[in-house]
Length: 127
Image (cartoon, rainbow, N blue to C red):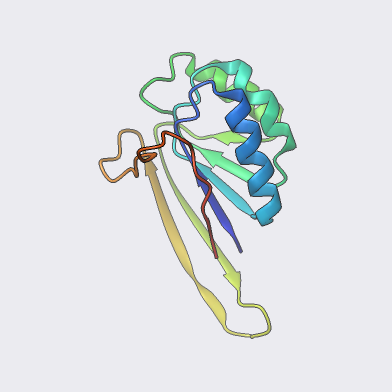
């Protein structure tokens, strides 16, 4: 199983589309969004994301119920301010299961990774 992680998309539709293109290219199975979608109009590009997506709300998300509604309409889930997700998979070519990982997403997490000096969003896939 490949996991993708994204956050702080802040209405940046061109970057959202680029990240979705890359995540689809990595063939991720699950995408975790750590919040700050901002506006409901940003949901439409996520319909192109092939993977399941689970996200939490960010501290800049004002229209919370509307965000949940429009993301659900494109098949993506926003669960609230906090979520624990259990994800596991089997190793390729082996019968031994990969240990299950529990991911915690919470609004305002102090361990969030900054975007870096360039200010450009990055895409990381972990398997």
